[in-house]
Length: 395
Image (cartoon, rainbow, N blue to C red; front, side, top):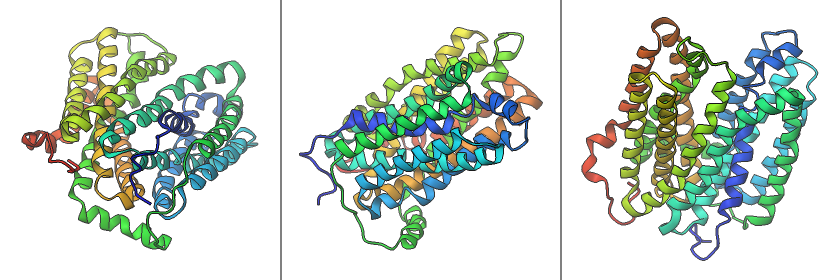
């Protein structure tokens, strides 16, 4: 079977919705942490629940996403959504903080199904529309990230933290049914033992300079992105703004407008080349830090968030457009390397953000965030004469 199905209609909207449903589960527990800690007597384990979820997602990226190259993809995606539903039941019914932390680990693991869907969409799309399709699917994924905290905050306040996980169960089952109905069968692209597939990740990293560059760019930019969102609630509580923690969740709604950048970036990558789009995305991130650092006002904060989300989304779509063109038989493994690097960058940004903000304040934090964005864009700015690649080039 051809890896690029030029004649098959791509169920883009359905895949975008499924991605959003899957990835939202990683972030549901963050606004609920106070409620969860209160239920379990402020156990120290309760504070580790978001970390357990993120760790599970990282493990899912590394251990499960490569399976998309080795197994029939539709069956794998449906099965992973059904496992996600079971893990959400375990989280909703958890009798202790330890049980909830373990369930959260597996919620994160199963939620990595979102990263099974994105390379599948790239494989289904004709080459001339691949960027546009990736952009639309990524817009669904990013909507899930941005809206999940707001949704869980409102539902948790109204009906308790368990209700949020119970709501996730039918959503995961519905996504499984939707994917079974709308996705075409997709045989394995390679025949490799599982441990060889994992070992090949290092070979891909060594042999593909475009993969290394795209991963470096996205790691730096997502690190910068994480710097901002890690301390936003603390910044808004300062006397200059005087806003409560709920305001930070509402600011996520501002970022939803930036989701429009994903499909626009995908179409632009098809026409002008992915490097040009990634360059613009990194530049928008730098401009956003100027809004945050040079102007102290809510309108400047809103404009900065919009530009930041648009820049990050445009860059991730452009970089995925580049890496999926490298080897059609290894798209899931390429995505594993790329997304693992991206989340490592996010972890570094989050780790540095709180320490810098608490010790040196907001202005120094803005310099740190801007420096990460600038470092991310250096390969693009350095080679800015290569905006438009030759036909068929992944650049």
